[in-house]
Structure formats: structure tokens, C-alpha cells
Length: 352
Image 1 (cartoon, rainbow, N blue to C red):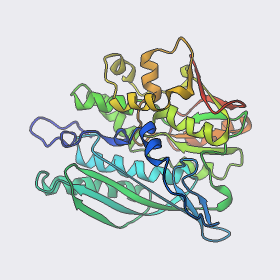
Image 2 (image 1 turned 180 degrees about the vertical axis):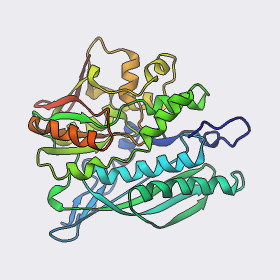
Image 3 (image 1 turned 180 degrees about the horizontal axis):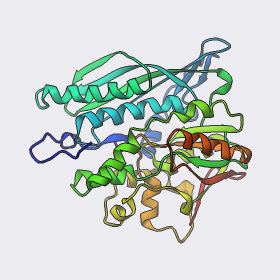
């Protein structure tokens, strides 16, 4: 978990972007997909692309539904082992976000073979394997290509009972919103790339991005938990807006209640904000109402692309204590109530 020293291969120097900040901006993505041809949807496909959910879900029988997802990106850190761990944790998260239990993975590997030493590539793969071992799933295969920039990720499959799927669109008016991990990974990654992230900050970033969102399994068994998603490349505002649009509700955020990673405020005040954060805001800012007291730094937190971010849970008031207790029991010390869902237009409102 040490920051690579001078003379060591810097993975981030091979990529134009890193982690979930590589995602195509939400506004551009919507434009790309708007004319996509429709296709017949089988009845067994319980979750598809209609609400931009975290994974596809296909019913196998009365007791089981298959969750299928994929995620991959370019390096967000220079340490190859850490890069592999972060990418694998991020990919597996989508299964937990649907309330499922992962069962196996396939590796997706694209590397500049003539530029990166073989042992570096091996460490990336080993990092991914270590997280899959922690999640108790095998890497059962995969695909490799020679590419211009380093790319690593997983296809992940899981299982869930059809009645326990937690979609991002099932939030109800009156629900409380709970965030499982603090924000700020994108800001930290921007500082890291410019040599401005200290060892303590790096350790906090790695701890946050390599913690598996395992509470999703237990939360799927709580009837009072209505909706879940994970916060990744579109930032908290982007993924919460998807939740609000899916449910046809207004999401209300309390800025003061949102957990932030240590040193992130100082880094943001020093100008370490990613270009992806600005693209995110440009893509969905028209659907967000900010109180006059929200500062540019706070807005940077809200639109900051999170790599391997936390679960965002919408649950009834009676379930809040149980949800927070579940997070705490699995080591998520910063999980917090950050807002609520309310009747109204599909927007996000942020107060200081």
C-alpha cells in the first residue's frame, strides 16, 4: 500500500484517465444511447437497461435469479497490486448493490505488452485474485488483449432470490437515504497523480476502495430496504438522480451529513478536482437544486467520481437503525443518513 517511489513504473502515466473517472460523461452517454434500437425483452429478464441499474438480472427459477455485470477501467493508482484490488472490488460491488451474492468472475485484461513489464501485469492480476478470494469466488476464465492503455476489470455473476432484488428505482416517499462509504476518491486520485497525496491519504483511499460492499447481501433480506445502488463514476448526485428518476420522487440531501474522506476538503480547496467531476455536473446539473450556501468545494464532493464507492440505500424510517447496525458490524464506520426521498418531481435538492 506504499506510494511508488521515483524510478518505479507509474501505471497512471499510461492512461488519460483513471478508475471510474474514465466513464463517458452522463450527458454524452444519454446522447449516444438515445437512438438505440429496442429489442424483445423476455419475461425472465427482471432487470435490464430501463433504469440504468447496476446489473442485469435474469430469473432462473422460483428461488434463484442470475445477476450479471461487468466493470473495467484504467489505473487510478500506480501500485499494480492495488490497482487490481480496486478494479475487482469495484466490479463485484454491482452484485452486492442488487442484493445478491457473487458466485464467480471472469477477468478482462488489456495491457500495453511492449511497454509494461510482465511482472507488473502479473501483480495487477494477483491483486484482482486476492479480492475475489476475499469475496469467496473463483476467477473462472476471462479474455486478454494487447492495448495502448492498461485496462483491468471483471465480469461478475451472482445469485439472488427474485423477491429480494434491490433495484435502484424502488425507493418510496418518506424513505431515509443512507450512504455506506465516505466521498472523495476522485479528488484523492487527482492529487495522487500530481504527487500531492501523502501516505496517510493514500492509505485511506486504498482502504475505502478495496472494502467490499458485503452489507448488500444482508440488506436484501430486510423488507424495509426498498432500493439500493452503488455510488461510482457519476458521483453521488448522478447515481441519486437515477434513483429519483426511477422512483419518480425528489431526493433531498443534507450536505452537512455526508461523510467525506480525511484530507479531501483541503485537497479540493487546493484545486484537485477531476475533469470528470466537471463533466458530471454539466451532464445533470439542470436536474439539481442547490441551496445558495453550497460552495464550489461542496459541489465538487457531490459530483466527484467515486471508484469502488459505497452503497446508497433507500429504506423506511423503521429500518434505519438496523441498516446502520449492519454496516457497522461489517466495518463501515462512516455509514450515515444523508437525506430522504419525498413526493415531487424527479430531481435532487441539496441543502447546507
